[in-house]
Length: 112
Image (tube, rainbow, N blue to C red):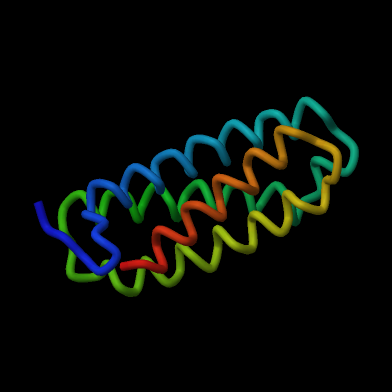
């Protein structure tokens, strides 16, 4: 297995991106059910963008693509933006869980 700074392998970071993609996808569905401020166009797009970039990043990691450094930067940035968007919906545990997962994923991506 290939190792990188911080002793994280591609597989380990891929798991973070897969988990983040899954949580953001579930959060988007949850927001649709909640309605109101949860379904603002900006927030919904951010959840979907984060889920998509994390899924794509995971695939590149698992095949050891030479494009990984660029993807890590983009993925970390979108995850941080998504966490901030989720944080705006204060008092909602589902959004807090999503924000926390996005931050973990961003931190993992920044270590590569």
